[in-house]
Length: 478
Picture 1 (spheres, rainbow, N blue to C red):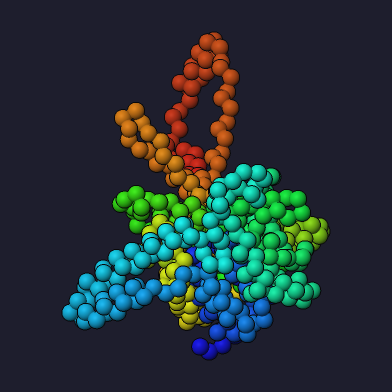
Picture 2: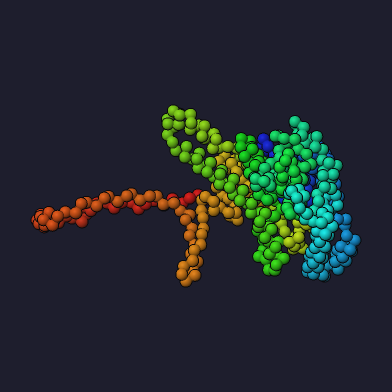
């Protein structure tokens, strides 16, 4: 693949979401980024994303893809001879059986995937975790869980150079975790502290399967307990830098309606983990929309007033902020997967996820315009590789939730059970207040007035006062 020449961004960040065995999709995405010659300046991750982030930040550029392969080849189950034999037999059916090959392949993938997930639950994963004897145990949060993650510490120490991570000139690394005692969402950041294998493990300590990790007297769980994406953290920390962000998500918000209990379980996971990412993205989009409105408001103030007070220039500079271009790479569910997909640590699944991540990244680079710095007034844009579409704060993705500020929809029911929907999408200019009614006249005064009026000639209809213009209706931009 040819090298990509990026626009002059001040920061290039990678965001890796949590998602267990689906994390090899992130490795494939990074594979594509490395082949394009793009050097990230910051990588942030949560859960399995924290492990991938540490493997990237903790190795020199020429070794990163190799180390990612080492990790995923190590923790996944070896290729199944039976699965390979069945796959070859299906392919040997020939073109005439093409309509049936996909169905058979999906059935086989689901069967062997279910087996791999079952083995992960029963036996654990090589050099990653194993069942805790007499689980779940009792004591402090680091002693209560169904699995022991001690092998992961050894694996991280073997594959990650923590001295490199903690060097003063190192790529920035941020790992999200949850403080068990306070419930706060925290980040371990090598710009503010020394990072060790325990911080990576803390970010991936998903209860009740994995135990909490104790660091300096505090206990930490998986960052996904609060939020499955570190997008907001990066946005807050780079408020003054034009930033390109590759946001690699492992859960897709959009999917077909479930038809059985297994599909319901899968759909519930997709919604639960993707909704937080979407909520944060929507919040960021709305913040930038408000910034744009503030700039427009300042622009309406007379120039003489603005020049007289430096406050207006300061507000305009702060409202403008920096430009953010978020490239969204979201793993798309496959027919042969099920509710156990995040525990499916098989070599076949890992290779399939990796290949999908690499393909999605290459398809993104095939549309080089998506990498452009947002134009003046846009500030925040997102790009969806699967729809080949770019969205801004002013022209947002119609499939996202825009209900936070500009429009909302709620439903009520009448006594007959009929649904009523309210869509207040227009703003109506306030009407001119009506004049106060004149004080009531006494009966005697009224009689005199009527007598005088009768003596006066009638007023021509043409002398009528002009009617007031109707109130102007303004539609809120979306």
